[in-house]
Image 1 (spheres, rainbow, N blue to C red):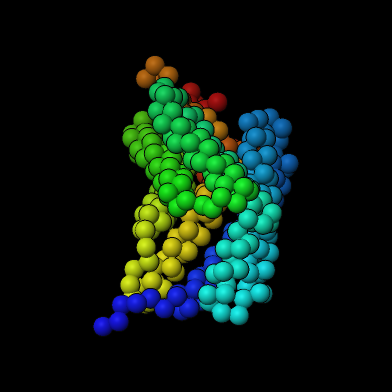
Image 2: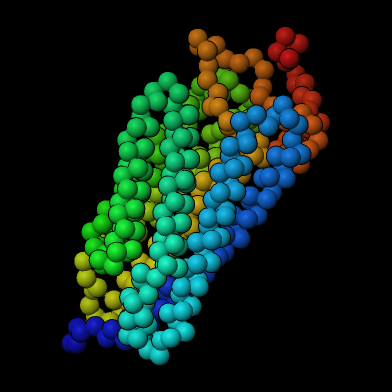
Length: 334
Protein backbone atom coordinates (compact mmCIF):
# COMPACT_ATOMS: atom_id res chain seq x y z
CA UNK A 1 0.00 0.00 0.00
CA UNK A 2 1.40 3.36 -1.07
CA UNK A 3 1.54 5.76 1.87
CA UNK A 4 3.44 8.55 0.11
CA UNK A 5 1.81 11.98 -0.04
CA UNK A 6 1.13 13.50 -3.44
CA UNK A 7 1.87 17.14 -2.58
CA UNK A 8 0.51 18.38 -5.89
CA UNK A 9 -2.92 17.09 -4.89
CA UNK A 10 -2.61 18.33 -1.31
CA UNK A 11 -1.59 21.85 -2.36
CA UNK A 12 -4.48 22.03 -4.79
CA UNK A 13 -6.81 21.15 -1.93
CA UNK A 14 -5.03 23.76 0.19
CA UNK A 15 -5.63 26.42 -2.46
CA UNK A 16 -9.36 25.67 -2.59
CA UNK A 17 -9.66 25.47 1.20
CA UNK A 18 -7.83 28.76 1.62
CA UNK A 19 -10.09 30.47 -0.89
CA UNK A 20 -13.16 29.23 0.99
CA UNK A 21 -11.58 30.45 4.23
CA UNK A 22 -11.06 34.01 3.02
CA UNK A 23 -14.47 34.07 1.32
CA UNK A 24 -16.12 33.14 4.62
CA UNK A 25 -14.41 36.11 6.25
CA UNK A 26 -16.06 38.37 3.67
CA UNK A 27 -19.42 36.92 4.69
CA UNK A 28 -18.56 37.56 8.34
CA UNK A 29 -17.65 41.14 7.41
CA UNK A 30 -21.09 41.59 5.84
CA UNK A 31 -22.81 40.28 8.97
CA UNK A 32 -20.67 42.56 11.12
CA UNK A 33 -21.58 45.57 8.96
CA UNK A 34 -25.29 44.83 9.41
CA UNK A 35 -25.04 44.47 13.19
CA UNK A 36 -22.91 47.60 13.53
CA UNK A 37 -25.23 49.77 11.41
CA UNK A 38 -28.40 48.44 12.99
CA UNK A 39 -26.99 48.87 16.49
CA UNK A 40 -25.95 52.43 15.65
CA UNK A 41 -29.43 53.29 14.32
CA UNK A 42 -31.05 51.89 17.45
CA UNK A 43 -28.61 53.86 19.59
CA UNK A 44 -29.53 57.17 17.94
CA UNK A 45 -33.26 56.42 18.20
CA UNK A 46 -32.96 55.59 21.89
CA UNK A 47 -33.75 58.41 24.37
CA UNK A 48 -30.63 60.05 25.79
CA UNK A 49 -31.31 58.87 29.33
CA UNK A 50 -31.14 55.25 28.12
CA UNK A 51 -27.94 55.67 26.07
CA UNK A 52 -25.69 55.85 29.12
CA UNK A 53 -22.98 53.20 29.01
CA UNK A 54 -23.75 52.07 25.47
CA UNK A 55 -21.55 54.53 23.59
CA UNK A 56 -18.38 52.54 24.29
CA UNK A 57 -20.01 49.42 22.83
CA UNK A 58 -20.94 51.30 19.67
CA UNK A 59 -17.34 52.48 19.25
CA UNK A 60 -16.00 48.94 19.76
CA UNK A 61 -18.53 47.59 17.27
CA UNK A 62 -17.47 50.11 14.65
CA UNK A 63 -13.77 49.41 15.28
CA UNK A 64 -14.31 45.65 14.92
CA UNK A 65 -16.27 46.14 11.71
CA UNK A 66 -13.70 48.44 10.10
CA UNK A 67 -10.80 46.18 11.07
CA UNK A 68 -12.61 43.04 9.87
CA UNK A 69 -13.46 44.62 6.50
CA UNK A 70 -9.87 45.80 6.12
CA UNK A 71 -8.45 42.40 7.09
CA UNK A 72 -10.78 40.44 4.81
CA UNK A 73 -10.06 42.75 1.86
CA UNK A 74 -6.30 42.59 2.31
CA UNK A 75 -6.31 38.82 2.71
CA UNK A 76 -8.42 38.31 -0.41
CA UNK A 77 -6.17 40.64 -2.41
CA UNK A 78 -3.08 38.74 -1.20
CA UNK A 79 -4.68 35.40 -1.98
CA UNK A 80 -5.71 36.52 -5.46
CA UNK A 81 -2.09 37.39 -6.22
CA UNK A 82 -1.06 33.87 -5.21
CA UNK A 83 -3.75 32.18 -7.29
CA UNK A 84 -3.21 34.43 -10.31
CA UNK A 85 0.45 33.51 -10.66
CA UNK A 86 0.09 29.78 -9.96
CA UNK A 87 -0.16 27.09 -12.63
CA UNK A 88 0.00 24.09 -10.30
CA UNK A 89 -0.54 23.12 -6.68
CA UNK A 90 3.16 23.12 -5.88
CA UNK A 91 3.59 26.41 -7.76
CA UNK A 92 0.83 27.95 -5.63
CA UNK A 93 2.57 26.86 -2.41
CA UNK A 94 5.85 28.35 -3.59
CA UNK A 95 4.26 31.68 -4.54
CA UNK A 96 2.37 31.85 -1.22
CA UNK A 97 5.59 31.23 0.68
CA UNK A 98 7.39 33.90 -1.34
CA UNK A 99 4.61 36.44 -0.72
CA UNK A 100 4.35 35.69 3.00
CA UNK A 101 6.41 38.78 3.87
CA UNK A 102 4.77 41.30 1.54
CA UNK A 103 3.29 44.45 3.07
CA UNK A 104 -0.24 43.27 2.24
CA UNK A 105 0.21 40.05 4.19
CA UNK A 106 1.98 41.74 7.09
CA UNK A 107 -0.71 44.42 7.39
CA UNK A 108 -3.50 41.84 7.27
CA UNK A 109 -1.76 39.78 9.96
CA UNK A 110 -1.43 42.87 12.13
CA UNK A 111 -5.08 43.88 11.79
CA UNK A 112 -6.17 40.28 12.41
CA UNK A 113 -4.15 40.17 15.66
CA UNK A 114 -5.65 43.50 16.72
CA UNK A 115 -9.14 42.15 15.99
CA UNK A 116 -8.58 39.17 18.26
CA UNK A 117 -7.17 41.40 21.00
CA UNK A 118 -10.20 43.74 20.95
CA UNK A 119 -12.67 40.86 20.87
CA UNK A 120 -10.98 38.98 23.70
CA UNK A 121 -10.60 42.18 25.73
CA UNK A 122 -14.34 42.77 25.47
CA UNK A 123 -15.07 39.24 26.64
CA UNK A 124 -12.66 39.65 29.57
CA UNK A 125 -14.32 42.97 30.45
CA UNK A 126 -17.75 41.31 30.48
CA UNK A 127 -16.33 38.60 32.74
CA UNK A 128 -14.89 41.31 35.00
CA UNK A 129 -18.25 43.08 35.13
CA UNK A 130 -20.34 40.00 35.86
CA UNK A 131 -18.05 38.83 38.68
CA UNK A 132 -18.38 42.17 40.46
CA UNK A 133 -17.84 40.65 43.94
CA UNK A 134 -14.80 38.57 42.91
CA UNK A 135 -13.22 40.54 40.09
CA UNK A 136 -9.86 38.86 40.58
CA UNK A 137 -11.22 35.87 38.62
CA UNK A 138 -10.80 37.94 35.43
CA UNK A 139 -7.02 38.15 35.96
CA UNK A 140 -6.06 34.73 34.40
CA UNK A 141 -7.98 35.29 31.12
CA UNK A 142 -6.62 38.84 30.98
CA UNK A 143 -3.05 37.53 31.28
CA UNK A 144 -3.51 34.89 28.59
CA UNK A 145 -5.11 37.52 26.33
CA UNK A 146 -2.14 39.89 26.70
CA UNK A 147 0.41 37.09 26.33
CA UNK A 148 -1.26 35.90 23.15
CA UNK A 149 -1.09 39.41 21.71
CA UNK A 150 2.58 39.71 22.68
CA UNK A 151 3.36 36.51 20.78
CA UNK A 152 1.36 37.81 17.81
CA UNK A 153 3.54 40.94 17.78
CA UNK A 154 6.67 38.80 17.86
CA UNK A 155 5.40 36.72 14.93
CA UNK A 156 4.71 39.95 13.07
CA UNK A 157 8.28 41.06 13.79
CA UNK A 158 9.58 37.77 12.37
CA UNK A 159 7.56 38.33 9.19
CA UNK A 160 8.85 41.87 8.78
CA UNK A 161 12.48 40.83 9.26
CA UNK A 162 12.09 37.79 6.93
CA UNK A 163 13.41 35.37 9.55
CA UNK A 164 10.82 32.70 8.84
CA UNK A 165 8.01 31.63 11.12
CA UNK A 166 8.31 28.99 13.81
CA UNK A 167 5.16 26.90 14.07
CA UNK A 168 5.69 26.62 17.82
CA UNK A 169 4.89 30.31 18.24
CA UNK A 170 1.78 29.98 16.08
CA UNK A 171 0.56 27.04 18.16
CA UNK A 172 1.32 28.84 21.42
CA UNK A 173 -0.61 31.94 20.31
CA UNK A 174 -3.60 29.87 19.21
CA UNK A 175 -3.67 27.88 22.45
CA UNK A 176 -3.41 31.02 24.57
CA UNK A 177 -6.27 32.64 22.65
CA UNK A 178 -8.35 29.47 22.96
CA UNK A 179 -7.51 29.31 26.68
CA UNK A 180 -8.75 32.89 27.11
CA UNK A 181 -12.01 32.01 25.41
CA UNK A 182 -12.46 28.79 27.39
CA UNK A 183 -11.86 30.51 30.73
CA UNK A 184 -14.22 33.38 29.89
CA UNK A 185 -16.86 30.92 28.65
CA UNK A 186 -16.61 28.83 31.81
CA UNK A 187 -16.71 31.85 34.14
CA UNK A 188 -19.61 33.64 32.45
CA UNK A 189 -21.78 30.60 31.71
CA UNK A 190 -21.11 29.18 35.17
CA UNK A 191 -22.10 32.44 36.81
CA UNK A 192 -25.25 32.82 34.71
CA UNK A 193 -26.38 29.27 35.41
CA UNK A 194 -25.67 29.69 39.12
CA UNK A 195 -27.47 33.05 39.14
CA UNK A 196 -30.75 31.68 37.78
CA UNK A 197 -32.10 31.00 41.25
CA UNK A 198 -31.18 34.43 42.61
CA UNK A 199 -32.41 36.25 39.51
CA UNK A 200 -35.77 34.55 39.75
CA UNK A 201 -36.26 36.69 42.88
CA UNK A 202 -34.86 39.83 41.25
CA UNK A 203 -36.58 39.78 37.88
CA UNK A 204 -39.88 38.70 36.33
CA UNK A 205 -39.68 35.62 34.12
CA UNK A 206 -39.81 37.62 30.88
CA UNK A 207 -36.75 39.68 31.87
CA UNK A 208 -34.91 36.76 33.44
CA UNK A 209 -34.81 34.99 30.09
CA UNK A 210 -32.77 37.92 28.75
CA UNK A 211 -30.10 37.17 31.37
CA UNK A 212 -30.11 33.40 31.87
CA UNK A 213 -31.92 31.93 28.86
CA UNK A 214 -30.15 29.33 26.75
CA UNK A 215 -29.53 31.74 23.88
CA UNK A 216 -28.32 34.42 26.29
CA UNK A 217 -25.83 32.06 27.93
CA UNK A 218 -24.53 30.81 24.57
CA UNK A 219 -23.96 34.34 23.26
CA UNK A 220 -22.71 35.98 26.46
CA UNK A 221 -20.22 33.19 27.13
CA UNK A 222 -19.01 33.04 23.49
CA UNK A 223 -19.30 29.24 23.57
CA UNK A 224 -18.97 28.70 19.78
CA UNK A 225 -15.71 30.66 19.78
CA UNK A 226 -14.28 28.46 22.53
CA UNK A 227 -15.28 25.23 20.77
CA UNK A 228 -13.79 26.27 17.43
CA UNK A 229 -10.68 27.60 19.17
CA UNK A 230 -9.99 24.31 20.96
CA UNK A 231 -10.41 22.26 17.79
CA UNK A 232 -8.31 24.66 15.69
CA UNK A 233 -5.53 24.77 18.27
CA UNK A 234 -5.52 20.97 18.58
CA UNK A 235 -5.23 20.49 14.82
CA UNK A 236 -2.49 23.12 14.61
CA UNK A 237 -0.10 21.26 16.92
CA UNK A 238 0.10 18.21 14.64
CA UNK A 239 3.74 18.33 13.48
CA UNK A 240 3.36 16.65 10.08
CA UNK A 241 0.67 15.89 7.53
CA UNK A 242 -0.85 12.42 7.99
CA UNK A 243 -0.46 9.80 5.31
CA UNK A 244 -1.68 8.89 2.70
CA UNK A 245 -2.74 11.71 0.34
CA UNK A 246 -6.45 11.42 1.16
CA UNK A 247 -5.75 11.80 4.88
CA UNK A 248 -3.46 14.76 4.26
CA UNK A 249 -6.14 16.44 2.11
CA UNK A 250 -8.83 15.88 4.75
CA UNK A 251 -6.51 17.23 7.42
CA UNK A 252 -5.88 20.38 5.36
CA UNK A 253 -9.60 20.97 4.84
CA UNK A 254 -10.30 20.49 8.57
CA UNK A 255 -7.49 22.88 9.54
CA UNK A 256 -8.71 25.66 7.27
CA UNK A 257 -12.37 25.08 8.11
CA UNK A 258 -12.00 25.38 11.86
CA UNK A 259 -9.40 28.12 11.48
CA UNK A 260 -11.85 30.15 9.43
CA UNK A 261 -14.68 29.56 11.92
CA UNK A 262 -12.40 30.49 14.80
CA UNK A 263 -11.26 33.78 13.27
CA UNK A 264 -14.79 34.68 12.12
CA UNK A 265 -16.31 34.07 15.55
CA UNK A 266 -13.46 35.93 17.24
CA UNK A 267 -15.21 38.98 15.77
CA UNK A 268 -18.83 37.80 15.53
CA UNK A 269 -19.04 36.63 19.16
CA UNK A 270 -18.16 40.10 20.57
CA UNK A 271 -20.37 41.68 17.90
CA UNK A 272 -23.35 39.56 18.98
CA UNK A 273 -22.83 40.63 22.58
CA UNK A 274 -22.62 44.29 21.52
CA UNK A 275 -25.70 43.84 19.35
CA UNK A 276 -27.66 42.53 22.33
CA UNK A 277 -26.46 45.43 24.48
CA UNK A 278 -27.29 48.15 21.95
CA UNK A 279 -30.74 46.69 21.25
CA UNK A 280 -31.55 46.43 24.95
CA UNK A 281 -31.46 42.63 25.21
CA UNK A 282 -28.42 42.37 27.46
CA UNK A 283 -27.05 43.97 30.59
CA UNK A 284 -24.76 46.94 30.98
CA UNK A 285 -24.38 46.14 34.66
CA UNK A 286 -25.40 42.68 35.82
CA UNK A 287 -28.23 42.86 38.41
CA UNK A 288 -27.25 42.09 41.97
CA UNK A 289 -29.25 41.64 45.12
CA UNK A 290 -28.48 44.05 47.95
CA UNK A 291 -28.39 42.59 51.47
CA UNK A 292 -30.34 39.57 50.30
CA UNK A 293 -33.35 41.60 49.25
CA UNK A 294 -34.84 41.26 45.81
CA UNK A 295 -35.69 44.19 43.62
CA UNK A 296 -39.40 44.92 43.98
CA UNK A 297 -40.00 46.21 40.47
CA UNK A 298 -39.18 44.65 37.11
CA UNK A 299 -36.39 46.01 34.97
CA UNK A 300 -37.73 47.76 31.88
CA UNK A 301 -35.27 48.11 29.01
CA UNK A 302 -37.19 50.87 27.21
CA UNK A 303 -40.20 53.08 27.79
CA UNK A 304 -40.55 54.72 24.38
CA UNK A 305 -41.64 53.48 20.97
CA UNK A 306 -38.22 53.51 19.38
CA UNK A 307 -36.58 50.88 17.23
CA UNK A 308 -35.10 49.54 20.44
CA UNK A 309 -38.43 49.21 22.23
CA UNK A 310 -40.15 47.52 19.31
CA UNK A 311 -37.28 45.05 19.14
CA UNK A 312 -37.23 44.33 22.85
CA UNK A 313 -40.62 44.74 24.45
CA UNK A 314 -42.81 41.74 25.11
CA UNK A 315 -46.62 41.80 24.69
CA UNK A 316 -46.95 42.29 28.44
CA UNK A 317 -45.24 45.68 28.54
CA UNK A 318 -45.54 47.30 25.11
CA UNK A 319 -45.86 51.05 25.24
CA UNK A 320 -43.74 51.29 28.36
CA UNK A 321 -46.52 50.24 30.71
CA UNK A 322 -46.76 47.07 32.71
CA UNK A 323 -49.83 44.85 32.54
CA UNK A 324 -51.22 44.23 36.00
CA UNK A 325 -51.55 40.55 36.86
CA UNK A 326 -53.83 39.04 39.45
CA UNK A 327 -52.16 39.11 42.83
CA UNK A 328 -49.94 42.09 42.05
CA UNK A 329 -50.15 44.80 44.67
CA UNK A 330 -49.92 48.52 44.05
CA UNK A 331 -46.85 48.64 46.28
CA UNK A 332 -44.91 46.60 43.71
CA UNK A 333 -45.35 49.23 41.00
CA UNK A 334 -42.94 52.14 40.55
